[in-house]
Length: 251
Ligand code: SAM
Image (cartoon, rainbow, N blue to C red; front, side):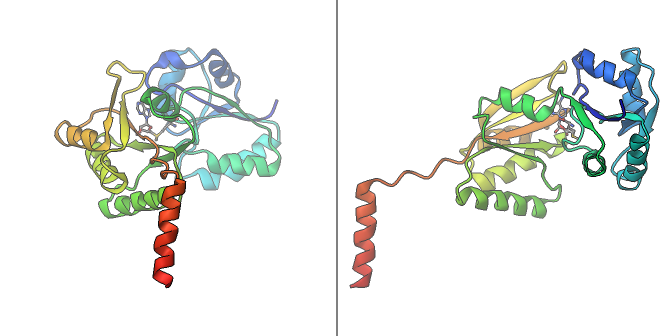
């Protein structure tokens, strides 16, 4: 059947490709991939022979209409990214949007994604959670983004936060989060998930920032931060007190 199938692939352990994912890749007329070198290794490992087409941030906008026409004409494509679930901090959204708009049937074979694995291992409340993806890489833009998150929290958002980060920026990102959200916030650094040196380090933002300032993180990293403390519920006494103080300023 024609259409588009979003296929999740492993985030480090090639054994995590599901049988259904392998079948979807083998049955597709072509596999749309971020980097054909990365996907060809995955296909070879599973003895899948499939045609590959590159679809990445630089050609997605221009290629989407052509690919959608081919699907409308009867072709079936699978979409993968280098690792994990396509569209999650990866290309694919523009193609999916164009396919939906044209009435193409879009389906998915779910599987690994670092955001969900990190969140579930963090020991932090799993919902609500806010997946931010990557923070800006420049210090000023990153601090501004963290301030925006702090402002939304001050307005009442109380959710666990999840960020993707490059290993060499882990220390500075944690420092910026500690500075903007509070050094006491519980947090976790999930590193090299599903791989040989998988590690989950839990602590306050301040503790983790201090650790990674000294020991540069290696490999792939997800940062999780526990929810902002809910504002203390006002008791009858504190409300009376506040009312008396307010009345006093009126008289
Ligand atoms: N689409 C992927 C997913 O579903 O998780 C994410 C792609 S994004 C370009 C790559 C980032 O995801 C990395 O910089 C890291 O923050 C995170 N990541 C991917 N694989 C990981 C792993 N095995 N362990 C920890 N973090 C990982």
